[in-house]
Image 1 (cartoon, rainbow, N blue to C red):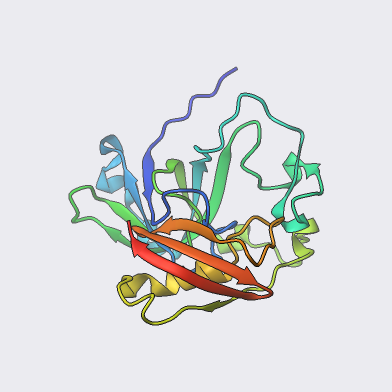
Image 2: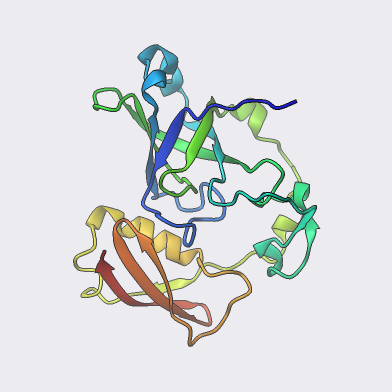
Length: 227
């Protein structure tokens, strides 16, 4: 039996590709995004009471990871990208149903915008254009479990990187997005299995192309320019 899912909204974020997107929600608290609903779901009454919650769950589509076939095992970045784990023991996007689940902070609701009501959120781990299936409130009494075990996710936790950039490199970059960029870079956006100090990596963020290299635990900005 097929269960139909309706796309009710899309994410507007500073990531136009998967590279650089934090591997989990909440890791880069300064990352701002918007949840923009399709016209038929912009009824203000549908949002009544949501302002009382500090955080929400977003159920979304790994739209860039659709495949015709699925694999029972995947290689999580946390384990270096070489060890296979059962797909249902991971949050990998490559699963029978490519559904994502993110807990984000609800910063505010914009009712007065042309496309409102819009949910402004922080700590999102979704790229621009991500389809959204549903929104649910985060309930501290039910969604937070004391003494829960994190399995293999608690092993081999990466240290954050020290980010080095010259003020002249970052001079033209939007001031209100510098903290978010630094947090993204501190999380080390490289694939877990790559550690070549001579390699130059790059990704787009907030309309800029960012290139960098990493040596030991330090990330060096090579260039930042507006796309």
